[in-house]
Image 1 (cartoon, rainbow, N blue to C red):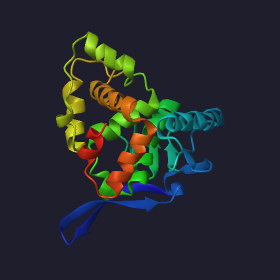
Image 2: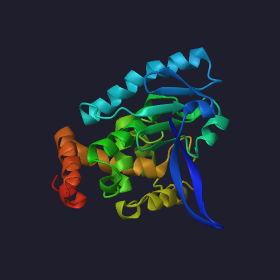
Image 3: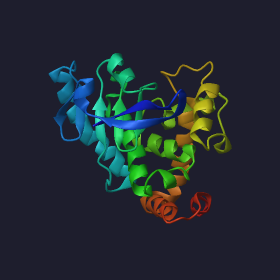
Image 4: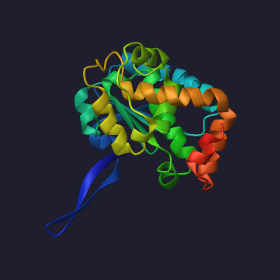
Length: 237
């Protein structure tokens, strides 16, 4: 199944946008392995390469998270048309237990980045608890997991060495904050070289994780799930 956005109406008035589940066959997606769907146009060579990248991505996740609790469904596109049909805007995105990958995201690094979002969502117990976690932590954790060159420690060193403007944690609380920051701080920077906001969040979380480790990370997530305040748990380390 795949998630799609529809608009609900009442008479002549729009009520809201919502997510619904559609069969992969409706959008020309086919299953090539457990939990993995691709568009019909993807070549067999690319399908095999994708499957080989999954264990590498899982190792990246396990290095930070320990054991892996989530089993996300992956929708991988070899064409931009396919990705846009699935609501894609950036290189990839995660919706609950689904990872949607563009042609530029068929790497172990970006698969693991989105998978880390799904892992957090799974472990924290769903959307209500997930919304209590600031975007800088969620995204920074995914940066730490992924080793993506545009986001990693080397990218942060470029931010520092070039004295590039970058956001503070307080600017990155909500998803809306995050999206604004990505645009604001990417001015005059090549996004194919580094992405300033991601590199910043990754640096913040990496420093915290050095002190907290896997045990601290899992303790924080369990605490949020049980109703404790994120900041209190984060500041413990």
